[in-house]
Image (cartoon, rainbow, N blue to C red):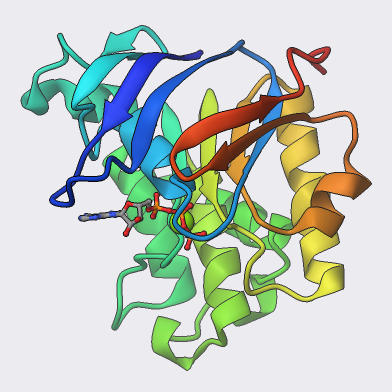
Length: 226
Ligand SMILES: Nc1ncnc2c1ncn2[C@@H]1O[C@H](COP(=O)(O)OP(=O)(O)OP(=O)(O)O)[C@@H](O)[C@H]1O
Ligand SMILES: [Mg+2]
């Protein structure tokens, strides 16, 4: 589902953000990606989403090649991939419901189904009671839950989640992890960046990829898919 082969990514700094990173995440797997701040976790996810391109090396995501996918075709990949941004990137001045409904409209959901599907998604992230609230009136944790609901709206084959529980309390984190496991069980591949070691310890069934200063220093290997 995601294949990185000798990927190096250099931004403006001379020191690359990623150095010769190689890994292969099979369809159906659940993997954490951990490492200290600045180790390159978000960079891996942005490359997998083609928001960035590698400086060196090859990336394949759900059959799309970093070398061969034209900019105008990236939407075809993104239609099948849910992305939870570290900084949420919700539509401001819109309600919770409108943020979810917007994605459903983009993927051509019949208009009579939009309300019901939005309601189901908001129920999954435990925000149904706040569906008419404006985004800017929500707490950071609640905004994160909206961002999670939005990422799942298109039933993605792949979920790229960047610190998706970073703003959540223990109970909401558990709900979101249960939700991720359940979508993984129904076939969605999950790659989740986190530096929450307790969370990783609580889920030994997941694969663990660890970055240190842009290098992949640890890979617990391919674990059984669910
Ligand atoms: N757009 C950019 N331009 C220049 N440098 C960048 C850019 N994005 C990231 N970097 C640098 O690349 C390195 C890796 O950053 P990245 O955001 O991938 O780390 P991270 O592991 O996600 O960190 P955190 O845990 O703080 O979210 C850092 O040194 C960062 O400063
Ligand atoms: Mg990051």
